[in-house]
Image (cartoon, rainbow, N blue to C red):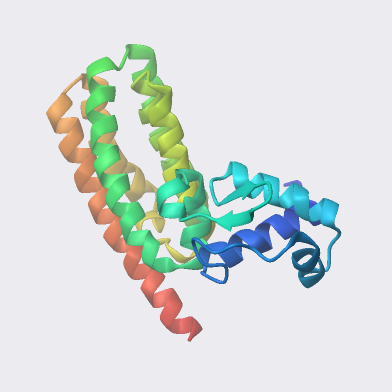
Length: 237
């Protein structure tokens, strides 16, 4: 197996990440003005040019607003931010994870119902192949990643690309900490059998059955993953 490529970060990337963290954890409070650029650049040990690039990215993300003659103000991300912030928020504060799981269940039920109403035979074949990939995974980590692909296939079966983007966002919110949440995938064959209870009614066009199966599956796996994560955090204390 080839080694995973090392992602190189530029100074701008690192500064953007540090500033974003300082905004999300409240070091820079919503509504407050950031220090003048010269002072802020010096505090982070970077040039003003580097700082300007990082601030521009954070402004595009909805975390800052710069006005000439006024300065750069920190925005309330709950008002101005987007779902792209979820992976960062979960990484910084585990209390976001229950919200992610609740949204995952609600959206997953909608997606399963919509997929069942629109699923073509070719999409049903892809869904079953995706479940088979879970069963064939060599370990729990592989099964967990394969399970994510099942959710993406369900979203694709709806024919609505926004559902696919929402699915990606919710997956990205918790997959970075997936190593601590492995119970639902400990036995890949069992994990696949549970997923088939969702995929089969979708492929058969049974709308309400598909929605209920998806909600039940997502509720149970969320409870198992949350328990895993709680145990993991207790061990780290």
